[in-house]
Image (cartoon, rainbow, N blue to C red; front, side):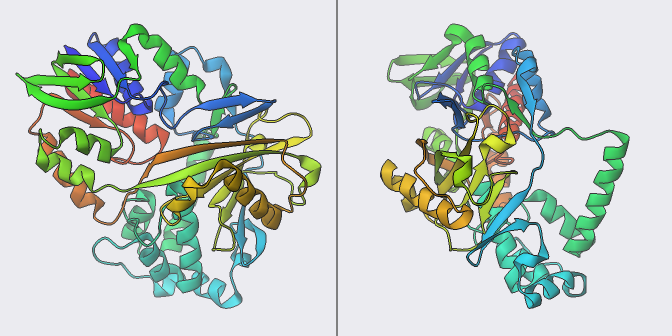
Amino acid sequence: MKVAVVGGGIAGLSAARRLLDRGADVELFEAEGRAGGKIGSHAEAGFLAENGPHSLLGSAELLRELAVGSGLEAEIVPAQKPATRFVHLRGATRRAPSFGIFSLGGATRAVLEPFFARRLEGDPTLEELLVAHLGREAGTVAARLMAGGSYAGDPGRLSGRHAFEALGSIVERHRSLLVGVLSTVRAARRRARAAPRRTSWSLARGLGSLPEALAASLGPRLRLGARVTSLARAGGGFELGWAGGRASFDAAVLALPPPLSAALVRELSPALASPLGEFELAPAAIVDLGVREDELRLPARGFGMLAGDDGLRLLGTLFSSSMFLGRAPAGHALLASFVGGARRPELVDLPDGELVDLCRRDLERAMGLSGTPVFARVFRHRVGIPQIAVGHAERLARIEAEIARWPTLALAGAGLRGVSAEAAAQSGLAAAERLLSL
């Protein structure tokens, strides 16, 4: 079977690798000059910066398998402790989680959640769901932190049940959010005693090492700088067109952000293009600053900090050099700040110098940063993070109903079943298995 994979992010690489391992004749088309999509690493002046994800969860088993299978097992490094989180709220940076970040009234209402808990009908937004459970103050802050930290998103538009499936499952099973969380934590501790849970991890040369290894394993089957511009039916398969030519394939995997897949299938299947095109993407910029540790009043020790209100213009900052060894020279810290997102997309287009200055000023307020950074880098994701917005289940049902009519076409990529790197890789694997079952 001759298969075209369109999109060289981790979803497309995962699909291509599985198809190749199972004997398919594969070509992978990637519009950019490198594979990896949002996953990539950059080493400069002793700092190691990431283009997108900075770590992978211990539960990211498929990505771990791909790393091991690509000869990177010796490079797997666990996250360092402590994994302390901070929240900047009402002009101060506080350790989280803690009810101390709320007023007495807000904390009291949150603690009394079991007495107020009620199930919401339909598909409430994340903000509606958490406010209904935790009260206006705590619910608004919690929704802001969850939306910003996971999606760079707007809590007033994300689906509370589907953007955070664990949250939706808890309130459905237990009615009370706090009771459900406590029950889930106790169950997790029992499982950990029986089989210790793996910690978050990365790779010694950065997460970009994984897509680089997968891309290298494809050899000439990978076409870089090949933006696919057309997809047409050709017998039982498809004809693809790109700037360098045209070719026919028995089957195709579209491993792209949903709106880009929509553009390719619009003439082929308007019924499929419509729900795919309804996905919104939140653009974001990552601003890496390398600073001297003694120029930080709040040491960059732990996982990072999130903005809990509009006191900062950035969404949050990861303490990269605290998470993993080898990310900064001795005596220095690497801080990766995220800017833009669904609520402030216009910030992504600021000039590099203005973005660096914005983050420097915010980190001065939040962490007491003084002095001038010794390293600065800006990386933009204008084709940003897919938003799991209200109505997601209905959109997904329409996609699945229409794709069932196209047995030689499969969809993959972030947004369909989650936005994590692991979810994207799993979607690529599922797309490959769909075609291999023909």
